[in-house]
Amino acid sequence: MTDQTEHLLLDGREHPVQVRETRRRTLGLYVFPDGRVEIRVPKGTPRRQALDFARGREAWLRDTLNGLPEAPPAPRYDDGARHPYLGDALTLRVRHGKSRRAVRQGDLLWLRVGDPRDPARVEHALREWYRARARTVFAERLAEWFPAVGLPPSRMPGLRIRAMRSRWGSCSSRGGINLNLWLIRAPLACIDYVLVHELAHLLEFNHGPRFYAQMDRMMPDWRIHRRSLRAHQREWG
Image (cartoon, rainbow, N blue to C red; front, side, top):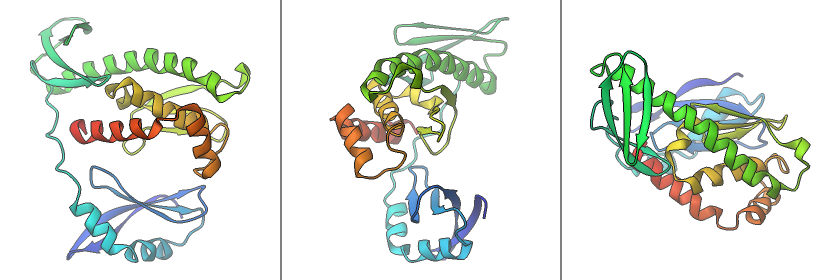
């Protein structure tokens, strides 16, 4: 079975759920802040077994979905719109320019685009600025935290930046780390938390007790930063 979208009947309506094969040994049910539902299953798990697992937790699933906060309003991409960066809110100042350019001045971000009235162009310019900043910030934080792992410099993981929908980061079995582009919008301590989480997977490629022991060793207050990241996501999406 490959990753696929199925549907569960909840309150008389079909709700889409994503069934994902993973390296885990047990089945897991996840609800994300935007209302997406995901069933994570070991490789080779029959589709029917995955859906039966979710149906057996229908009451929890319904309560969790009903308890989700209202989604934040759709972001604007025009002059005066506000967007987060490292936990602070920046105000966009969008102007016409033949060559695209982005300059930050305090809590203002000046964007020059070909057509300031085109939200798609403004969004693209903002995304590219985020990406440029993420390359620098994420690399700096990786260099800062890697020594805490206790591995030799030769084991320094490669770093990739991707715009991901459901995860803040991931670590491959080969030791490479992916960080979500949109993490650059969160406070620096939240970025550090996600990075430490992925670095811990270099030592323990699971979420068992020994993994969390590594988290506690490297960042004793990681639970505080996890809560902060969830609060950031509720506010900004």
